[in-house]
Length: 352
Ligand code: BGC
Image (cartoon, rainbow, N blue to C red):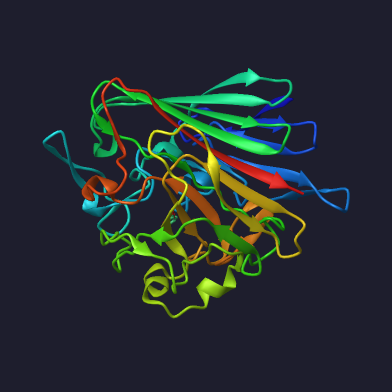
């Protein structure tokens, strides 16, 4: 079932709509056509109530003022591009710079800040919507017009499947993700440090102090990034490893072992388990990397129901091409060739 309602208004008066996808298991996901934001994800709990497992805001203005991309679709390029500079097909480009001297998550007016067109694809079992957006040539400094589609499907198996499609007339870059912050005990339940995580990655991309990859693809052995066995989030956060200091916590790209170029099938990448073990999140993707981010800079951030979010009260699993890949030729490429179709898929499965 899908219920559509009015969520609010953009500064220019455009209506922001909310689409609530509900399956027969009693789960529902609320998605805004603003930024394709996953606003709420409710799952049944033992108290015969619902737990909302993602962080978010109450109003359009709060989402627009947000610099943490809560729940949003990211484009054109998730994560950082060093100084916003890259060369493509022999031409140099300069993108918008919006964090320090780098481009983060597609620039200051990225896909997260746009109102997308939304169509209901299926209103019955496995409710599904399609969001579309056209980004003009030169948008935030990126070359070529690109037409993107994102399909959200809430399956009857409690998987939220996110499919990203795109095509461009001119060769460009595309590296989409979703920036949901999960708190499996509830968005208002405090720290996730006692939750456990597992990521099937034996390598990661170390960064400099500006969070830009050095180019090394390093082994995770004997580092806080060895998360191949279930590990409490508090453990890497407590490490005195230099990378943890640089990221002010976990804010790093892990290279997923199961990645195979060209595959369109989502493989198992990792999971998180709530501290009381009631809820499990499993992540599947066909992308090569995952940025694990523990909301390190949150401080009294006023979220939904006026809850004040603090550091480490949410965790993101941002499936992606590695950060700054346009400047690291040995990283899997985020180049989208002219007139070729882009497809990627990430699935978040909730077991409760
Ligand atoms: C980045 C962080 C950033 C956060 C919110 C994450 O994907 O890696 O460094 O602070 O997004 O903007």
